[in-house]
Length: 372
Ligand SMILES: [Zn+2]
Ligand SMILES: [Zn+2]
Image (cartoon, rainbow, N blue to C red):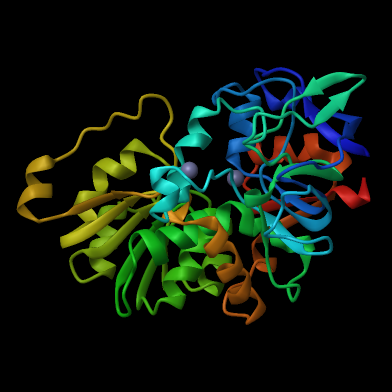
């Protein structure tokens, strides 16, 4: 099937060079465990920019995008979990049979990491341009009218929420909300600090509110995000260029917070989190730390105050369970996606979206491949 798609041929030094090429590719009809999905919305996060800049190793050329939602249009003979016409959000590759998948932690699936990327889980490549194979991106590839994924990636959701916003459930929401509701399992009455108020951070703020946290402090370098953060549940906001964030957090939380979430991946936040936590408090590392990611830490205080430091990857979620659950929260209006969308664009504006992601301060931008 022909599909208009955003293809990246090689890593670039700057996304200012408009590296994505809008091209017509061929997407093969699904066989075996494959599912053909018509993409209705696809959103961007920093990972898309990181891959374009070569910070994340990828197989080039590839069809871009790792957050998508759409409708199943065809399935291979071995597919059992979705049918034609189902509304789906695209998750991540999971083999279902490695130790971590069997234990319900498919976010840590070994096959996902050992596959080397660039293909479906099965090793197949189902995109072509003029007879040349084009790689898949993280087993998803959503910046295209049609994509091909293995069936565990196409996760059925309620058809009660609009597909035009549902792509947010395919990365930022499960990452941020999962860190709060699943990794840390925040209790009612807790005090929570969220560093970074983009799509991941605001999902964390909403989840903390949903969990009944009574103090929710949002921290960001961009005060333009503060109004939305308050609307979504933050009880206080802190601009670290104006005040010392550790002092501010201690003032707001009666001496120290129960939880500090670093949604940014900043070594400075990790180093200073111990100053913001009460004894037995928990620091959750969610953002991806660039490079080797080594940080100084006051380990004596970690020991004496019985602090806990947790990593959270994909919200510690088994996405086949988590994404339908999060979609139900949206359908019952306990969680909003619409408010986190800062721009909606046709697929042809993918380079503008990449530039904005890199240089601006969007919460979430959504591409509509149907409008290409
Ligand atoms: Zn993402
Ligand atoms: Zn696995």
